[in-house]
Length: 282
Image (tube, rainbow, N blue to C red):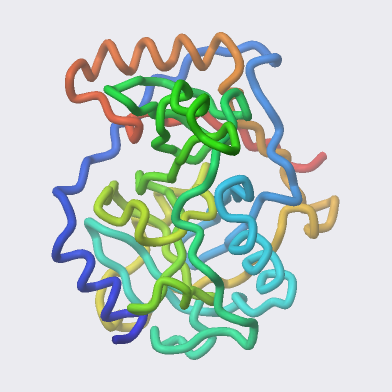
């Protein structure tokens, strides 16, 4: 089974997609913002606009490292979005532009879940029975409750990313350890992919561009990634400063309270939409 057909098969068993709900944009002081690390920020210029992805090495260090290497080798420049489903995702990253290929780098072992130490950069927003929902950087995560850490040999709990809009995941075939270069960015929420496809980050800006990418399988005259680069590698004269609401600050706590009050029993971690500021170079 190919990368393309295997991910398509997964879509038929998916839960109903949860729509994205734009969060209010509260006014925040400078202390309520953090600047994205240029070494963990991927800038994807597409024919529909720029997409900025905050990478999350805490969740998938090997996958993040491979994508960085491919971007720095310019493997992704000019590749098309060969498979795009309106209520699902936009897939790209195949050097052959067919959905059947991969890079010359080795395939990767799955990083579907990770071990999380209590208090290690995880910002909880809800605690359903036995679980915690929150964010690691900007990526939405489902985790065992911290209380379970007292009963584990490593003092950590099991956690995994969840597929909200903007989340970036790796494509693979029927072998869990077959991800290589192909990846996809979610246009809508798709929780049935959780713990089945490795998550390596989330688009913090440009979701509107992802949703504007031409749909189809195959796509006729497909959109493409014109240039993919690490923010750290961009010339200073072209490099924007990207800031996102700090999940450790009071503005974030206020945002969560407002969203949960508005959504009520329908609240989802996917409802948390972190405000972003992008400042052009001086």
